[in-house]
Image (cartoon, rainbow, N blue to C red; front, side, top):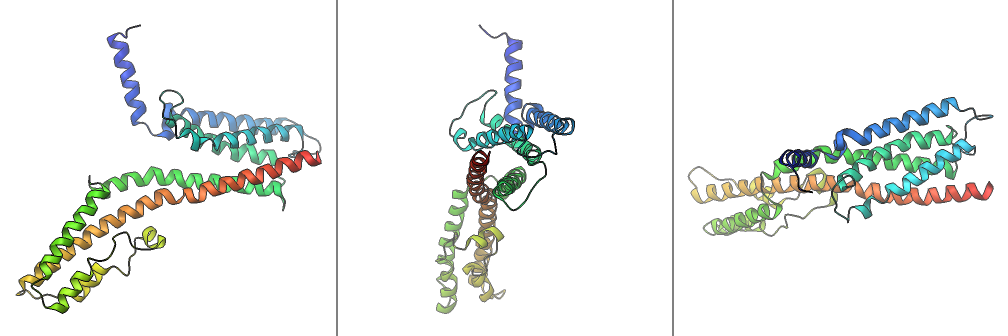
Length: 288
């Protein structure tokens, strides 16, 4: 059926709104509302249903919440698989991520009520603790993705990482030429700064943005120029420009690292949670 102009315009507007809406606010916060309903129903049922002698994971109510929680955890781990399939509509990747976030948060209520607040030194509490750590790392990831992409874009100033590297290589060539008229000792200091890999540095250096062994900064500190020395003044100006370009590139690498590093916590914790959850389920059915 052909679309009428009014229907086509309305559909195009909805598509534009979807594209410009973040995953947290997807579909007018649909999954946040679902999270609220789940939490209200879970808490109300916990308060209204009488379990003798008290709520615990081994009651029929506890088993019900435990089953829901386990199935949710398994579904949430499928996000990595889902990312490999790009589709649009109600189950687009953005919709899936939104559901992942809010249903993941619902586990705080579901799993805690499943325990009946009976926690101890056992595999059951280990599974609950790992789940809470996974959720906490996920919350950190959300905050990172909410704040850092804009900072990353602003720092790049509409330039790609490859273009920033090209700027540094261009400055290196100019520094090499500007160092030729200088005395050998001073020229060697400047040329030594050209040999350092701009990506050199430990993980901590990349995350902190601190590079105490930066050869360009060392060259700037050692070379002092007078107002009458045009060659030295030109070289120092180029070194200052390179130092600023390196600072921008390193801020870019720092922001990228902060965007990625949380996954190195979130994913291993998720695998540990699956292992502990399996042990929890097996032990429950073994002693049931």
